[in-house]
Every structure is written in structure tokens, then in C-alpha cells.
Amino acid sequence: MISNYAELFLICAIILMPIFYETSSRFRYYFKFVVYYGVVILNSFILIPVFLFRPCDVRNLILASKLCRLASPIISMKWEVRGAEHMSADRAMVMVANHQSSLDILGMFDFWHIMDKCTVIAKRELFFAWPFGLAAWLSGLIFIDRRHAQRAQTAMNESAKMLIKKRTKLWVFPEGTRRTTNEIHPFKKGAFHVAVRAQLPILPVVYSSYHTFLDDRNKVMNPGHVIVTALPPIETKGLTNDDIPDLIERTRAAMIETFKATTKEVENRFNLSGHGMTPAKGTTTVISRIAAAIPSSVRSVGPSAPIATSLIEPEPRKIGSLIGGDASPIKEPTAYRRKDVQRD
Image 1 (spheres, one colour):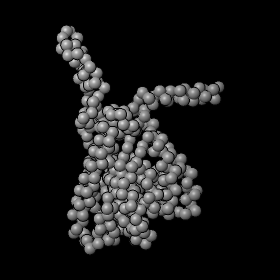
Image 2 (cartoon, rainbow, N blue to C red):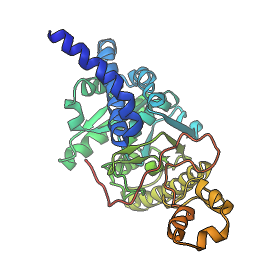
Image 3 (cartoon, rainbow, N blue to C red):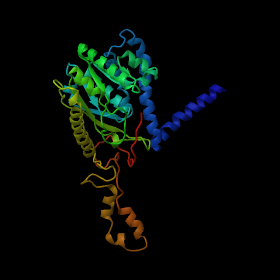
């Protein structure tokens, strides 16, 4: 009897899932993140025994990325990498990137093979999220306790010795927490202290804005296209701690400029408005084309005028909608009027 109910539940779930997926943006949002996290967790279970043969080796991350990157096409994410020659340089460096979502890690999976030997600074709490935490530790991730600044700084300084010895890259999100506010926030100093003390170059990496497809507040996630740009390295040879504030500002300014440019490029490529509410300049909507074909007398005469007017006035389109004929992966309209969202 129980098995019959289980089979019936499974059949209903299989039938209803496509319906919910097509009709509910909230369902799609959670479904895609479940798929993403599910792929990572499943691969963690599979890879932990393999990693035990080479524990705490950053090269394990290349194997992990090959499997985890399979989640991107499943949830309709495309990552366009620029400046790969900077990422692939065989030298120790500190890579700093803007942090918008946990999807940043999914993007890293897509180009980890380019970076080759690279590890990541992660908050200590992630280590206890097993099996992912254990797999990450076996892959050489560096966990720091952000609640104790001195301990965190010491751990990062010690990691610098390993970077130089093994010619390994260190990836850091200097904003500290991920923020879906469509801007790059002020940086913390930790990564820059490491770079200056070890005299390692800073390599800025910029993800274009996720606001073209992701709205965490309204639980909407459309197919997305992200441009990931590695800028030329910024040398730190000869710099001291006194130069760190200026180094941070120069790095952040370069990243902000690239962030705005690549975000605008994505918007223009798919005929999206930069403000997320109006069509790109020079484009026409279906409603506006219909309006042009309606005689002016119909628009202005008779009791139906208000209805006709409401029909022919084109509604503002939103980021995430397909306005032109381009084969864009960004198709569904979403709204992005939201307050500053900040998560740990």
C-alpha cells in the first residue's frame, strides 16, 4: 500500500513539475538553485574518496570543476571569459573578484582549468557544510575565521608562503559578503595586505552584473549570460603598507569601470534597458507595432478610447525580457526595484 502511494506521488510530481516550472518564476528560482547545489553535493560524495589519495592539493579543484560545471547548462547559465591569458599565467598572484551570489563559484568552475593551480579564501563556517566542506578542505581551500580578524590575517599571511613556493593563485572576494545591489562595494584590506607583504601582483576579476537575470528579492532567476573579465595584473613590488589604501582604490576603480562596461554590453547585446524598466533605445515592442497600425480615429473617438489608449501605450519592458530578434538566453521579464540586499 505504501509503495503504491509512493509511486502515485512520484507520478504526480513528474507530471506537475514541468507545469510549475513553466508557470511559476519562484518555482524555477528554487529549482535551479536546488539543481546547482545538488550537483555540487553529489560530486562531493563522489570525489571525496578520490581526493584522499591527494589530500589538500589544489589540483583536486580542476577535477571537481570539470564535474560541477555541468550544472551551468542545466540551469541555462553561460559564462564568457575574457583575459584568459592573465588567469593562466604560471605565477603566484592574488586574484580579487566582485561577489554577487553563490553563482560566482559556479562561474569559477567554468574556467578553473584556465587558472590551473588556484585556491580560495573561504569563511570557516563552510567547512562544516559537509560533504561540500570536507571536499573543499581536501581540495586545498583556505578557511578563515572572519569573527577574529587577527587569526584570519595570520592564516592569510601563512598561505602566502605556500603560494610563492608552489606558484599558486589565491582567489579572494574582498567585499566580504555577497550583495545583489548591482554595484561593487568597498573592499576589505586582507587580500591587499597579503599581496603587498609577499610582493605578489593583484589580478582583478570582474563579473558583469547579475541583475540582467537574477532577482533574489522577488525569487526570479532567468537564463543568464555573464561576462567574466580578468584585467591586467597590478604589480605590488616596492609597495608598503602605507600604499595599500591607494592600491585598493586603484583596483576597485578599474573593476567598477569594467563592471559597468560589460554589464552595459550584455544589456545592449540582448536589447535590454540599463534601468531594467524601459526598452533599449531604437527598439520597438510588439504593442507599439500594433499601435502604429491602428487608425488614429480608433484611438481618440468613442467610449472605447480609454481601452484603446491603454492597449496602444507600450508597457515598459524589464531586464530579462527579449525585445529584439536576437537568440538571447535571457527571456523572461522581471522587476528589479529593490532595496540593498546583503547576506552573509
